[in-house]
Amino acid sequence: MLKLEHFEEIAFFDEVTGLRNLKGFKKDFEHESLDDVHFIYVDIDEFNRMSAMFGEDAMDDILASLAKSLVDFCGQSDVYRVGNDQFILLTKSHYICEPSELMKILRNPITHDHLQYNVNVSICVLDHDDFPDIDLDQTIRVLRYSIDRYKHQGKNLLIYADDELYAQYQSKKEVEKILYEAVKNDRFYPKFQPFVDTFNNEIIGFETVSRLRGDSGVLKPDVFLELAEFTGLIYDIEMKMFEEMCKFYRELKDHKDLKVSSRFKAAVNFSKHTLERVKFEELEVLLKRYDMTTNDVIVEVKEHIIQSERSYETVQKFHELGFLVALDEYTNESSSFLYLADIKVDIVKMSEDLLAKLADSLEFKRIHKVYEFMVKVAKEFNLTVVSCGIHSSDLLKIVKHMDVEIGVGKYFSESLEKNEFVKFLMDNKKRFKIL
Image (cartoon, rainbow, N blue to C red; front, side, top):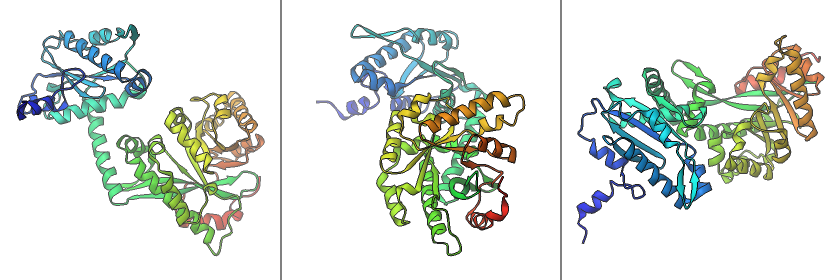
């Protein structure tokens, strides 16, 4: 009969590779000095995609083969499997375990059932002597952050943790703490950017954007959005914005001194993280609470997000339920025009960056042709086109000449708080002359 201590010891080992796992790693170094320790963190690129394609048996063989390569590469190192697709090597030999040589070895194909598989890995290297004040848990977090920080740049990366990267990690932790406190204390609030008919200046809707009330002032999404997605807090923020959108839409409809357009719509942005977590029944409860239908709502998603199969399916579900779907910041960089024919979307919001280039005299002719062509293609697919970034009367004239009927930009208005938006609606006829 196995004794209790045997069961406890099993808990420190990874069944697939035979290596000690994260628990074993922490136990082994619980009371050990990290002086002169060299960490090599190995992360398998696109692990989930490979698992879906090749299956569990193949992935187990790949992991076992990779683990053997890591152990054989540096005889004086300790090797641990610390996650589904992560390994750590620890050594005090900086020369025998040269990371660039390890990269070359790991690029060799791995064989399973007479088939060869190419496995891509990214590596982060950290010398603890460079960061003597951090403990083991912090070291692991820095290594993971370093890989995640640069993953968007591609596969087979070799990253060295330096002072600059560590400062970025520290900054991330500070902002992360601020975000958690902000969500907990309800410090996110909405502002509303008007959608304007470019031909008659009628206000036909709004886009809901988030703001964070910080100790030193108001923060825009470009400051916190990436980290909010990284931590998963983006879901709480975007669901709050969805309810704020519904609430304000109903307030405008019920306002005794306002008569909003019959075309009036309310828009909200959803990130990839939210698309993969959203529960439609929760959205339907909020719509019912504020006496709205799905057709009153525009769900905006960035073009590149829908390349994910799961996000793509969610977007199609939004369309089937009657929501209007908009491709936000559209440039055609992440998808072909044929993609517009395949995916069920209703609106294309042209990238503000494209329109900004029209203000550059050197770029004008070429970008003008590109912009005009993209507008025509979208219209061929019976999509509504929205021009974003209309910051001057000259740009307004250009998009009107292309027969773009809806615009967004500073020429009409900045994003506004509720009372400002109501005043904007009331004053709108006086504010603009029809061009």
